[in-house]
Length: 159
Image (cartoon, rainbow, N blue to C red; front, top):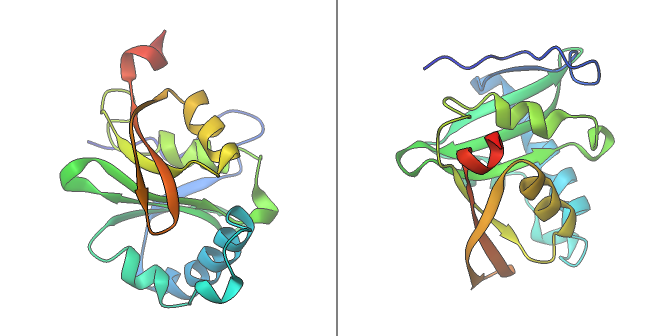
């Protein structure tokens, strides 16, 4: 199923989403560190390594968001479970529609019950996902702390 990779919303029209290619790795490794350092200020900065991107996205479907040919965000998906493993936006590009464009570029976005885990302390991410139609369906504790298991509800989103 093909995803619409562009958007006509004025604040988002300059964002282009495309599938990951190997040459994206260096930029996304750096972006992954910058965005996690910003999103998880309670974690020590030395907890994040360049190799994390490769390890944590292995065998996942990855979408890359670009503005002016620069990677400004990415989303990684474990396709067998429709599980969004990562959605990170460069801190310099936050609140400019990049995350929204990435979500909407997912194959079958409007009909698929995508799931994800979001750390409970990441209040802005929880609000973002709720705004986009995700509802909490569970919770747990992982190595990074308490998290909420969320699922995209296409019926709620369409309402």
